[in-house]
Length: 404
Image 1 (cartoon, rainbow, N blue to C red):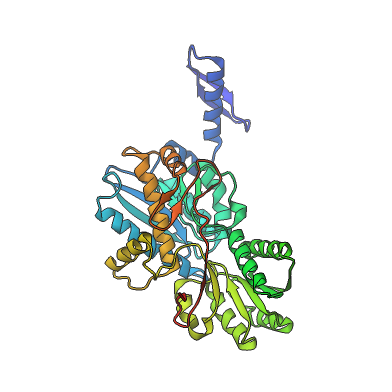
Image 2: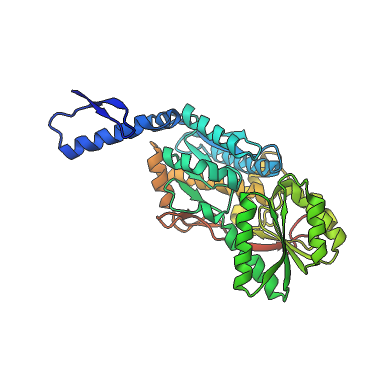
């Protein structure tokens, strides 16, 4: 029968009274019903049905910068993810279902990322999420992702602040903290003492600035200058002048997107001999080529194997997938998109022919020491789920590729 009760928010609601049920069971049913009805409408819809899947297809959602200062990251990601999907579908898909990527532009604006993901959840248009781009953007959506319980693979950020005990989020790449530590250790090991830091003036850059300062302090060093670069690069001249005034022996770049290229050019002009080192997010594939001779000697951390060297099976498979789609240029960003999609597909394979989001989460958590062919993913069965600690250090040539 029906009984009128009050929700935790004080609103009356009708609840089914299960005749003969144990009092604890009745209480649990009331609370779960109240929590569901008290949730925002888009979350109630997401909890009520698991969208994005049919007998023939399965849709993966992604909100990424396809415009704005980080457009290169979104473009690279899409190329790699779509190459992986095409390769998987050509082999029959996953348990007979064709994979589809539903990618929506957010321009690197967190509120647009929220709106995009909210719409996917509300409309039930995605079974899982893949690689939304940016630290502030992922910071904005992770509470929503956790509330809805939608599996989310490979956020395109290495921010340690986002690597907590989330049950639905499965990171692939190594953390920015590990990247920064590697760069600082290398520079200090070379005897460099005067290190300046240029950081992007947003949540991403400020977190990495803290990482850099901690790494320097641990190595007995200190930043000689800390300059904040606007995300659109509008204060570039002031930043270059600020660094030039100190004349550091090396500059650590914890920047991202389009502003990094003119920054490197500007620093090379006033400090021709300065060492420069950047994290993996500092440059996109196109940016490496744009730098040309200016980029020669720039050191960059790599969270994926070198995409231009087919020494590993995963890189060879990536290159083959890209070539089938007419792509002859290979880059770290598209390789990362390819790898991330492959990880999600592996989870779907393990989730079985009748997948649910809960089954997919469990399947992903169960991935142990899975070798993709030179790149190992291991979630160790417990949160926080971080699949890889792979970090290498590359040095650019004038052709925009890494030296052997």
